[in-house]
Length: 145
Length: 237
Image (tube, one colour):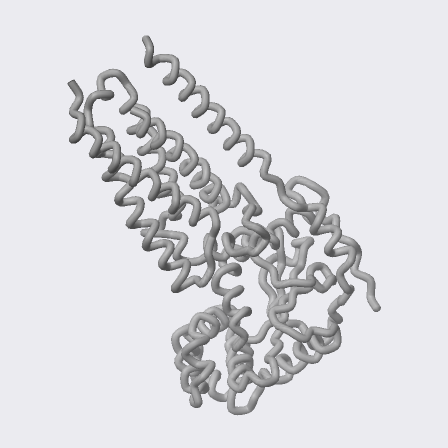
C-alpha cells in the first residue's frame, strides 16, 4: 500500500499549495513567495485564474482534498486489498492532469508568465497520476488474496 | 500488527507535513519594512494642484495615493491595467484604503497614442473616462497598429455609451487636449521617462508595481485599524 501512502503525501502537499494560492486569491495572503518576479501574481490576477466563476485554486483545494481522502480511506483495513481507491485516485488525478495541462498552456501561450506554484502543483498532480496508475496495475499482476 | 508500525510512522509524517505547511502559510508576512525603506530612498515628486489633475478614482479620505503615468499604447501599461488593476480597484480602492490618479503620458513614437488619450479625455467629459480606458487597453492590439485608429476609438466610445455627437465635437476641436498636455508636462517635470511610472504618496516608485506590492504598500502605510497613514511626508522641491 506504499503507493497510497505516496498519493496521500503528494495530495497533502498539493492541498497546502492550493490553499496558499486560494488564500492569496481571497486577499488573505498579500504577497506570494515567488522569486520576486511577480509572475505568480500576474498569473493569479489574470482572468484565467477563474474557471466558471470560481478561482482555479479552489478546484485544486477540492481535488487534492478528495485525493487525500481517497488515499487515506484506501489505507483502511477494509480497502487495503481492493483496487477501487487506486482506480478512483487514478481517475481523479487524470482529470487533474488534463486541467493542469490546459492551465500550463494558458500560462505559456496566453499569459506569457509561469507561476512556480502552479508549475509545482502540475508536477504533483502528474506524479499522483503516475503513482495511482502504477498502483492500479500492481493489483492486476498480483491480485489480493 | 506488523503493518501498524509503518502505518503509524506514515500518519506521524503526514501530520508533521500538515503542521509545517499550515505554519508556513500562517506566518506569511507582508514586506512592510521594505516598503518604508523604498519610499525613504525614492525621489520626491509632489504633484502641483494646477491644471494637471489627472483622472481620479477612490475616496479623497484615503490616506494613500498612487499616481500612475501611463501611455495607452504601451504594452506594459496595458498589462498592468488588465492583470493588476481590477484587483487594485476591487480590494483597495473600493474599500476606501487607496485613491488612484491616472495621468496621461502619451510617449513620443507611439503614433496612435495621442488620439487614444484625446478620446479618453473626451470620454471623461461625459464621466466615462475609466470605462473608455478599459476598452482602449483591452483592445490595444486592435487599434495601436491601425491606420484608422480614430474609427476604432469612435466604436469604443459608442460601446461605452457616450453621446457620439458630443464625442465627435470634442475630438474634432481637441477640447480635452489641454488636460492631456498638462498631465504630460507634469510627468516631464518630475522626470518620468518610461511608462508606467508610479508615484506613491509623492515618492516616485522605482519599478513597475504589481497588485501584491500595492497591497503591501497600503498595508504598510495605512494598516487596517492602525493610524491613518505612516507615510513619510512629501516635501515640495
